[in-house]
Length: 125
Image (spheres, rainbow, N blue to C red):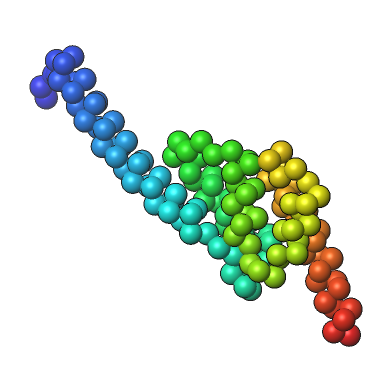
């Protein structure tokens, strides 16, 4: 086995790092595209959708993306199914969404969803 000079070792490390960096950037671009195209499906509930959404966000963060809660909150509110339009309006009108955490948003949406489903049960009975 031949020993490497410091210069050769450094060059190999740089090539390896550059390759890893390219792969990370490709993966991050794929995740950004997924994030940009996220839309809640008609049959999804808040818990399922926000879990799926946050999985993409967490993967983006792992790959070096710096994304604020305010941006995430805005994206979630803008990507909900139209059946949640009233909830979205209520949340936007009653809270400062720029200071709202993702956890607080999820709690509010779950509470509104629960109340909405109870109202639907009562009207269909």
